[in-house]
Amino acid sequence: MGTHIPSIEDTKELLKKNQIGIIGVGETDQGKIPGKSSFHFLSEASKLAIEDAGIQKSDVDGIITAFSLVEETFMHCTTFADYMGINPKYFESVAIGGATAVWMTAAAAMAINSGQAEVVLCVRGDNTLSGISSTGMIALIREMCHGEFEFPFGLTTPGGYALMANRYLYETKGKREHLHSVAVTMRQHAKLKENAMMKDDLTLDDIMATRLLASPLTKYDCSIVSDGGAAFIVTTNAKAKELGLKRDLIYLHGMGQGFSHQYLTSCENLEQIYGAVEKSGKKAFETAGMTNDNVDITFLYDCFTITTLLELEGLGIVPRGQAGAYALEGRLHKDADTPINTHGGLLSQAHLGAMHHVVEAVLQLRGDAGARQVKNPSVALVHGNGGIVSAHSTILLGNEPVS
Amino acid sequence: MSEEKNEYLKPLPDFRPECKPFWEGTKAHKLMLPKCKETGKVFFYPRAISPFPGSLNMDFDWVESTGKGKVWTFSVHYMGPTRAYKGETYVVALVELDDGVKMMSNIVGCDPETVTIGMEVEVVFEDATDEVTFAKFKPVQ
Image 1 (cartoon, rainbow over the protein chains, first blue to last red):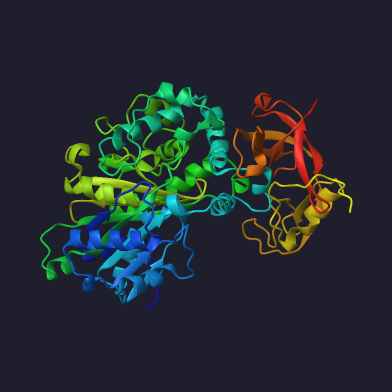
Image 2 (cartoon, rainbow over the protein chains, first blue to last red; image 1 turned 90 degrees about the vertical axis):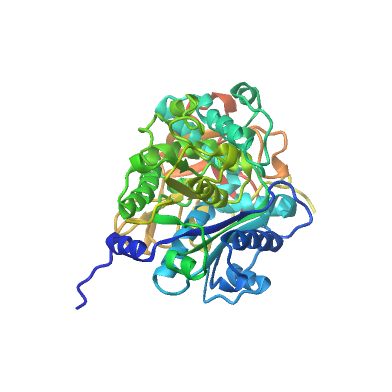
């Protein structure tokens, strides 16, 4: 009595017992789409995911949303439940920046594991490109850093990542091409993604010839700003069967978080960042009983080119200091040995946090990725990063049940 | 009404009351750092509770920094966050002070393109408004 200390083993047991996974996904058009509100995109993405799952709106009994950068709401999840006409048993807003979408999956699983809900709609949408005012954009830049001790020095959002990129290049004796090559690969992938925003040819030479925004980063090293929505539905295998759904779930095998800092001023060294990425991956791997060797396709948070390199090294996919050369060799391409972000990522498809990373992982594991399909992947790693490489979340998804 | 200074149009700090001694310091052209009375260590940014592991101390001394340090990392900004920066090229840096803390600031008094990681710098004070003086850094000659 009272001697049990909860651990990852319990999560492992629950994931095995409950067989939780993603049953439906939905993505709206992405890009510059004026005339639609944030809640319009949330509804449209939800509709698409509900239809893709083959369920009814009334089957949804849990709602997890994020936040809007345009339409500020005090209680985002319930505001959307009201708008959508859903009366959920479980509701939550996850607000950890770019780590949000990945963690929505984990939060849905935790809600399901504790009996709070059975069919959880996870959705994010925003009219960030069309709807944000210039003062709103400045507020957002300020929000990304310390309003008292960083922003007054003129730090921009690309600038924050540039500080880390310059330190990374210094420590690894790297070169600008190492960063830019990530953008080139993402562009190659985006060309194959129907709703990707940036499909023009992009070469390393193009990027090297472009002016710097914040050294060593150009505009091509920065994620795009877009309008659009994406959603996915998390449920259990048993519930899917009860609802008569034919499709197999894409199962959640493991999840983990890792925290480094919120403000760059508090970041002692690159190792602190690597450590946080590693922690999120390690917990996910331990829960799943897997290692990097099990992963067939990887989704990394590519809000800026530098984050992708730090994550490759933090997750142990590439040894410390070698991710730049690895990217430059083209090894992140869908046809190479470490396919990353086959949908074009935040750098070339669209920016909705890691929502599209999760959706694309599901499409790949289902074999539904069309021209982007990698050969028979069975396990995907999806990583999200909030703040300036601050907060990390990792999940492992697989098309086989948890065993 | 006489305007002694040009109007300052760039972003000013969002003040938290607990950081007042820092800004009083810069106004007097002194770089003051909070020092945790429990651990005896200085930290930055100022806050109401000690950030050190295990410490819940809320009582601090304010000590004057040497004002000397090295550039830990930097980025030359060719585009600023607001219109007030239009046409300006400036350096944002994380400076590692000899006191052992990092501080974000600008590197001034030199060509932005000459700043390097590891460069030795020292504090200079820039009066922005009657209320606000910034601690910035210039290369040690």
